[in-house]
Length: 113
Length: 112
Image (cartoon, rainbow over all chains, first blue to last red; front, side, top):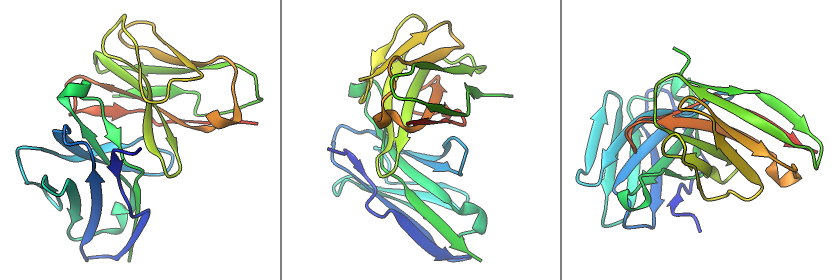
């Protein structure tokens, strides 16, 4: 049973608009959440993270929101650019499990120019 | 700065053949990992090594073995490849979990 779920396999957005990628988790022990970005034929690269003690973290065009009561996090990209087209993976970890990352299935983002 | 280097990048095996995927990192990280990526499944942890000399099973270890040769190198071995092991394999390393997990470029393995 997947503990980290990304229910939207793909998302298409116009350049300049907001992209919102969603992620849900089931394990309340998770205390750290990350987003990774992956281009074809490359490995995933770290994008942004958030600790469970916060509800928002911002880094330039990227903002991650965490709603612990709903076990939901989202990644907002504003404004979206064609270079943002990639697969985005949500990941979670817990100290109790040695901080190993548990990944969602990924969402393919296409930003149209 | 090479980061995490995996070899080979592509491989085709026949069912029953064996092979070893090589991984090396130059960031002096203690921890190293092997993941596989399958459509609709995300990245799943096969094995990891928290430090030199230790290895532990991850979520999907069956059919694989690993060796932490030294601090830099962590190899993944398929003793008798099966079509179900067709996947993209990623090696990763980290120092301070959960932050700072760095991935290699991946090995695309096809078992026919």
